[in-house]
Length: 347
Ligand code: ASP
Image 1 (cartoon, rainbow, N blue to C red):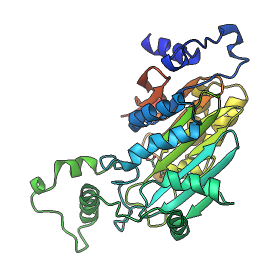
Image 2: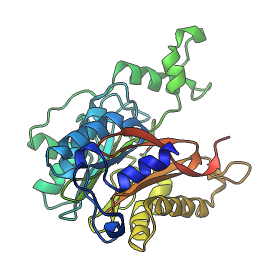
Image 3: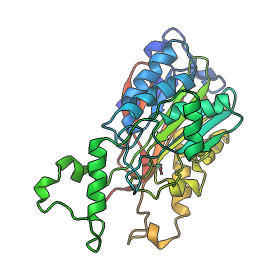
Image 4: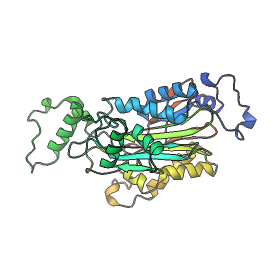
């Protein structure tokens, strides 16, 4: 009931920031909605709050969502993004990000970027201050430094301890030993062992324009140089200002093989709601899981992927392979968690 009324208020633009601009229900489907509307992954509540604040000042959705995710990139407690992100197998933090600007249909991205904690800002600069879309590794770092970014260590002590415990637990045939007493392993390290994540943030501004950003430290303990879906336009993010936007988190490899955010936006173009489009993306990934190494004994995928979307009409939705799970929606008055649609119950 609550969810339905929230959906309705987002759809009809009833948020505080949109008061006085009633959209008549009968004209809703013909008109483009105006924000603020921000959709983000579950770690994105502070990002959504910041993004709405900036949209309410009249700024472009891209300014808003990037300022939003910068908060999470700067947060050492979030081990899936930016500073404090979990490193690759060599203990080096390598970050991926992309952004897409609806009004210009322009995009920028960086992959395997080291030593710069806000890859989303660098991705935006690639978009605005170069003739390219994607820079990787040293090239991305040099570009960031040319724009005045300072190199810093991104590996926090806690992330290092999680990585070290992973390394020491890998094999009993190598020369690394875990502490003899399990009590010597900090509780947080044990809990965090299998954590991955990312933040994606999509925004509809008060001009009715749409932009998005995705930023991550990628899969924990990945091979050095591995690039996931997050910096790939069409995989980790896609925006079409006439239609809507989709962002994704979860196992990037499967998203890369399906370019599923692009698929979801195309489904919205064909008339699907954001929620339906996200579920089509989920089903496409699941349909293409052929390798036994990606399947559980019951034949279902042994990984999760989640999609987040909003459209030009001010609707939003999310779907995941496994649930229950939640994502964040801010409609200008409420910053709240919303349940994903999902295909399978998490066992
Ligand atoms: N999609 C990210 C990647 O594959 C990871 C995640 O969202 O958990 O790099």
